[in-house]
Image 1 (tube, rainbow, N blue to C red):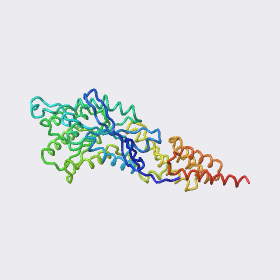
Image 2: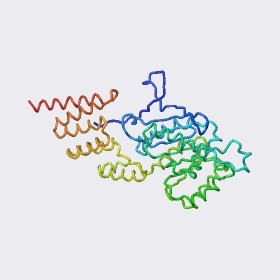
Image 3: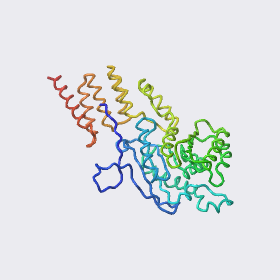
Length: 387
């Protein structure tokens, strides 16, 4: 059965009000850090499909969680719903002392001017040794991590890209404050890019209309990237002349995620080429992102119904059975297989498949009544044949 896909935000937040009347997008946790010697507030968003599947998901980590978490959840879900990126778990981290946490080590000559800074390496260790292991133990995650940071978080992203490129597969640096410590990261970048050309992580850097103090170091950094022959596709940059330092984050996340997941989109033309073309495309994605990327259930269903519409019953049955192999706990895949058996005239097999769909349907599944109606209809057709 074909269905409209609705974007539903799941709440994990404890709330005294009726849950059916609330729209919440994640849970709030407290993580006691031995490295930072303090507790950190963590916000976690889980994709809607998480609870009804055994899928694993890439993870997007954010600094400045309280201000960046909500709109980023909306952006990720919008792009995923439109087949531009995969669904993702999103983890927002609250900063207690931004300057301390996010800025790289300060040279002694500038220490007086930046007395509160220089803790980025320690904060990165918090990600590596405490936060990431916690998330990967508690949730089903793919071995693909994205980091995104804004302003001081932007230089934290570049510092992490240079110091530990293997920790994240992709870095999004939004309006990085590259003027920090007399442009130290820019000075260090040529040495790094000369010595580290083989890692597979990507970097996406943005800048808004923010004046010379921000723009000039940014332009220097881009020149360093170009001059040191950083592999094409490993980095990209984008300017937003109509945004300011605060407003640029939303659009930077949007384009940064598109760059991270470049090639993810499946066109209507490719879907129309059938299952072999889809398998080839997703094999390519699996190689590019270094984990197994499955064809979405709805996409296979689409191909199955296209095939069924051509009267190719046996081929449609094969496609729907392949969907069951990938998504054995989905009620809809059994219902679709039942449609193919019914179109073929095999009402006994259709009835069994519809019954299985009904058995897998959750109590709140909006299609449960349709599954039951399909099962009853096929049962009546079976009865008429046996009369």
